[in-house]
Image (cartoon, rainbow, N blue to C red):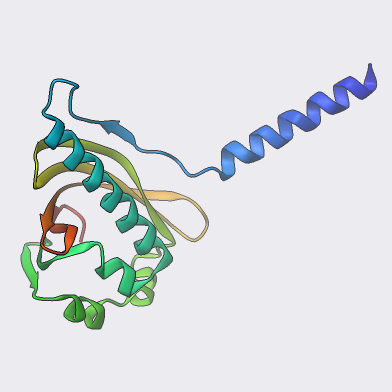
Amino acid sequence: MAVIKLTLASLLVTLAASVMAAPQQPTLVLLSESASVQARAAEAAALEVMYEFMRTFNERNVPEFAGTLAFPHVRVASGDVRITPDRQSMIDSMDFEAFAERFNWSHSRWARIETVQADADKVHFAVRFTRVNPEGVAYVTFDSLYIVQRTATGWGIRARSSFAP
C-alpha cells in the first residue's frame, strides 16, 4: 500500500508541475460555424500570426517579431499614433531590453482573443494581454484591438490600438 501511495503522490507532483509549466492558453471567442469558409480560413491564418507575434515578442527576437507585422504598421497608444513605414524601421527602433527594464517585464501572454469581424483578407481581434514580471507575477492586463491583414507577402498585423503605454 505504501508503494501505491508513493506512486500516486509522485504522479500528482508530476502532474502539478506539468500544469504549472504549461503555457496558459487564452480564452478564444471565434467565428461561428455559420461564418463563410473564407472568413474562417482567414481567422485561422490570422490567429497563427497572433501566436507568432507573442512568441517572437517574448523571445525578444526583433527580426522575427517584425516579420509578424504588415507595413506600414500603425500603433495607437499613449495618446499618440505611430506609423512604422517598413520592416527595417521596426527592427532599428525596437529595443526589447529597454522595454523590459522600463516595465519590469519578463514576458507577456494572451488572456483573451475574440474575433470581432472577419472577411477573406482581414480580421479584427479584440484582445486582452497580461504582462508578467521577472518573478513570474502577472502585474497588469490591457485590452487592445488588433487588425490582421493579408498582403502580397502574407498575413501580418497591420494595426494595434492599445490601452498599454
